[in-house]
Amino acid sequence: MDEQQKLANAYHSNKLSHAYLFEGDDAQSMKHVAMEFAKLILCNGNQQCEMKVETFNQPDFMYVSSEENSIKKEQIEQLVHRMNQLPIEGTHKVYIIEDFEKLTVQGENSILKFLEEPPENTIAILLSTKPEQILNTIHSRCQHVYFKPSDKQHFIDRLVEEDINRAVAEMLSSYTTQLETAKGLNEEHDLVALRKVILHWCELLLTNKPMALIGIIELLKHAKSRKLQSLTLAAVNAFFEDIMHAKIGIDHHFIYSDLKGNIEKYASQLSLNQIIIMYDQITEAHKKLMQNVNPTLVFEQIVIKGVS
Image (spheres, one colour):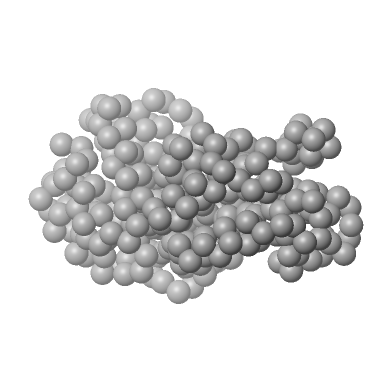
């Protein structure tokens, strides 16, 4: 039984939760299922109502997203204000927050209060590809819906068909599963050069920490925007993910398939605990970047607190 069917069964048996956290790396599938679930709750087959939801014109429905690196507190304040009002066209109100990990600390705390005392018949659907960056108290107040991992190799092949360099396509797959987002980044930036700088910095992290600190200057010359800095952190994380898979012997398609020999060498040199410490530091760096901490400080902390 797939996720959509399970949610439909919960609706038809009157077992709706007040909050759902959709988790997975396939953002497109999560968004589709969330929209279908919202239409079911609000419309129950009424096509005119469904059209309003699809065009974000249904008064009992609100969709929050941001192209920026963070979802602003003002967006959440507007959401809370609207969801505190009585339903206008039906019995329920539904809101979806895409990329929930993008919330600022203030925004996340506002939603936490809202989840603790939700208005009657108000359903939250929170979508996240990085659930580890979300407060544990948010997790504990949601019913979790887990989505199967996306087929990264298929996504990479699609990008290659779009004339994106395979090495760049592999790196992009660590950051997004959305074709248009990946294509846009590739068109707007020199990702071949960025990848080269990222990999050099990863090697310095493991071999020469003083030079890794100096290397942050060059890294941020190529990753000037928050979006590119997020991509850089995802790419660094993928580097250590490859090392982890090599370490524990999982038969896995490496994100950096052209560096298999180097990755296996580092896997033999590092302990599992050291790799986990790097994971933790990169996760913390993601959180700090979302909180608008100075990017130089964000990357410095990875060097200082990472593998010694």
